[in-house]
Image (cartoon, rainbow, N blue to C red; front, side, top):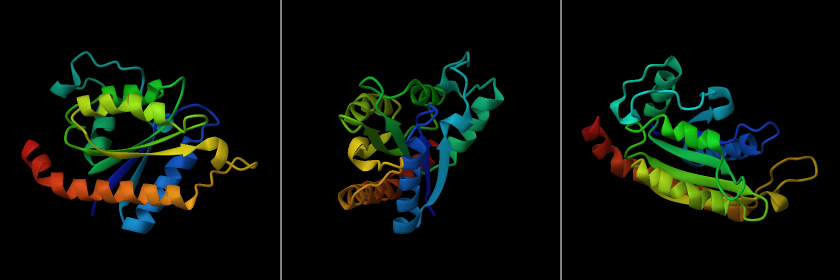
Length: 188
């Protein structure tokens, strides 16, 4: 069984990230039978990076870092759900990525961006160099235009084309996970 992490990258009150993450979670569980671990950064509540040693050393001083490491290391693949704030992705997501290094290496990653005007495309573009610098293996991205997909009650309503795009991304993540498992085992 593959364990997929779905990271809610925003901690802002009133955010849409939790709804977007539940959409990803539902599609992953129903369509592919994946075990999904929802990692909401608002609940994880990491402080601003406070480790003295470089993350590649894994010499973590703080319990919150050791717990974050344990949770990420238990994943086979991850989807980063990110809003677009000021043409980029939010600081809590960057902070959560920066806390670790080895745990991210060789991990398949999918990106789901959301936003108003650009549907999160600039956040996804800004995030791509970060995940590749961490040695993650990008499987692709899906963007959601919130202006067109959130109804008057504030409920996210993706269309069939977005469901299909997400299903494709999840399928690619599953395939990459299968292909990369031998490399991950060697690295461990």
